Length: 501
Ligand code: TNX
Image (cartoon, rainbow, N blue to C red; front, side, top):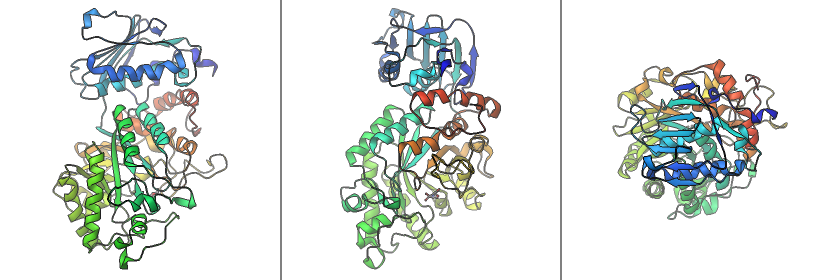
């Protein structure tokens, strides 16, 4: 990593900004650098200081100044001001000989400007230990705003449980690439991961199991609230998923009153899908669902409740439709927007709804009909965006095959080279809320495994969601420039043969 002292070319930013204009004198962080913030930008200012201090060892004091005129023009300044055309998440960033100015209409925009600034600094800035520097920032003017409002990733904490500190690390990785939604797949056949006060055996019993007999785990409501708060500080909305009516073996194990014939099934630690179902004609099922959704809604400030709905092969289609006709309005009654996997679109619904497309093959006409009825679509095509797919033949991680291959392989170019705005016939860009990269965890149980599957594909999906332009040749070079950053941050990654590392 001899090249760490070299200024990074400003074009190495991922996701690509709208405009990047290099030129003029650059700036370098020093002992004299201060971070000056408008009163409404204090949290972003402190966040920036916390990011930069460990590696640089610089004091970087944060000064809150209501009065722009009174400020020295040296250093980093974060300003809240109307930025016409940049929207809630857009920002302008300027580096000159005297400092760095980031301006945005909303703290979210400043937050994304801060992520861009990180990428302008040398890779060593990502180290948690002090590094010698210097800390040059190349001269550049950037204007930027995202293409899609929903840019997400999903973590399956049900097949394998990931403790809060691992989820926090995942959140930081999303923030780095300007993603703004964290979908947590909290329940499945193999485990139930969120404490529900009215149904304590869900986690007391089914919190203990995981795929392969591995140790389980569960989030107390307090731990979940801590995840939500950590995400929120990074402008990330948590989307909790309670998967139903299929993928519910863990719930039936905990409460046999919910099971067919009221006989508890065996705990399940395999990798099959589609064999379990809630009982559709039992009132207790709806008391259960209503109670769970009520507690999840109360813990979740974000607008979405994800009700799963995928692969309900053990639920006859008429039952499935009846179930959804009762459950979707429950979500609305809690003041939340229904979100679900694409199968929910087979059941008409007049309310506000987000449908998550995932199957690699073209969807049936039902999806078009749901969109015509007002549904918005989040695109997670498995053969493009699934972070749990293998990269390619012979890409085992340290001898362990990592990932599934039913929709794969998914190499970096597959993840990068597609356009959400024209991906599905009958789903126009106006109906596309955004993109999400799901990471299912049947074969994944450690932070290193997560890193390896996430990098370098997540940055590709991030650019698909943020940037309007698609430029594979340029992306390959920009992505290659990120490898030293991942190394400095202690992140393991797949050395894809498609990238000129
Ligand atoms: C399909 S994608 C599933 C999950 C599996 C995943 C593995 C979706 C909505 N359902 O239950 O974990 O494949 O890739």
